[in-house]
Amino acid sequence: MNKMIFLSIVAAIGISVSLLLAFFLLTVKTSNKQANRLFAAFLILSAIDLSGFFIFDFISSHLNLEIFRWTTSLLGMPLFYLYVLSVCYTDFKLKPKHLLHAFPFVLVNLILTPRFYLGEGIEKKRIFEIGNTMPEMYSFQLIVEIQYLFYIISVFLILKKYREIYLENYASAGTSTYKWLMQMTIVFFAAHSVVAIKNLLKYTVYKDVFLWANILVGLFALCITCWFVLKALNYPELFRGIDSKLALAKDLIPESEKISSKSGNSPDPIITSQIENLKNYMTVHEPYLDPSLTIQQLSNQINIPVRDLSVLINHHMNQHFFDFVNEYRIQKAMGILKNQAKKDLTILEILYEVGFNSKSSFNTSFKKYTELTPTAYRNSSL
Image (cartoon, rainbow, N blue to C red; front, side, top):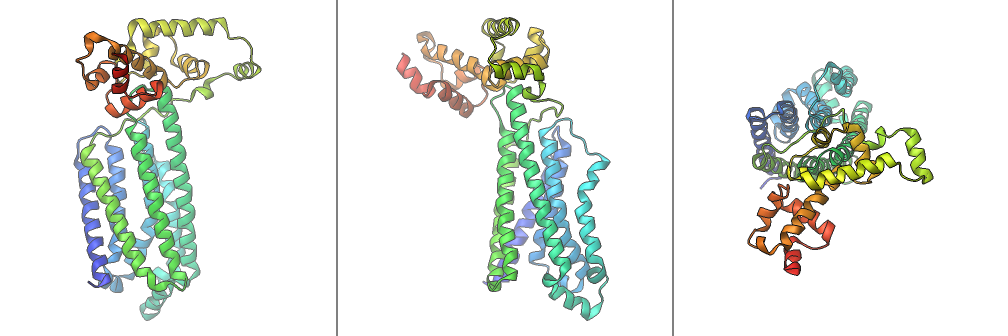
């Protein structure tokens, strides 16, 4: 089969799948419509980008539209960045200031206007053919790479902060949001690396390999899009956001207290008393049995301001709230597993009983605290 025909087929399939997923995201019922719309817009842009692999006849007679199609790639990463923000933070709202993310797109189109958009006739076609060697195209590609680097680093920083805040404020064993977004970001980084290498081939002696590289990029894009579809269909309510106003415990600690901790002074009696009261409350009232327990809910139950409770657990007890709560859940599970009267309970029944909602998370946490799987622990105890 001709390479161009094969590439066109791959691109057509990729576009169809992208548009199908975009339609799904725009119509599925969800509490976070904003995130779905942003991701749908990102997928539509991806489809527009893939269309360049097979609209050869259209390109020859509509060069301005083809140039404009090139520049739409500068809207992809801003959309993905805003999508990540909207998924991670429940209170994120699009504002007029976010239009500034389109500045590189506008700038590049202004740079290309004099000789590309305003060019005429045969001279314009010639410019189009040798465009890769023109200063405007060098500027365009440089802006693309700088913009990509800026946004990919920004997304990684957002995810890092999201994970830290989640662990300090939530006890739910599911961290699907972080895992999904991190996987997606890594996949995008790998895909962009392949595209960057492909584009570099145009300036080397390996120009003949460029078409094969395009085929590889097309297949890669198709695989990524299919992966998105499977994720969306299997997990239509995948995400749980957090409040962007939540702060890390280290940012809530007074400077004087930080200095005191470093100097190794004896523990504050008030802090020691609060820790003992907290532990007693956890043992007696067992709030950890609620699988969706948050630090705000626990704060309300024991009448300690959430900021103070966050510092108490995450700083003075040197544990994430996530680990603090799961430790009680595991201890409860260990007691059940050792109980002869409850030997007929399955592992699944036990994990739900102690506050977990995921078997994989339960097994991971249990092995972290006991170095044994739940089944192995039960067999060694009975």
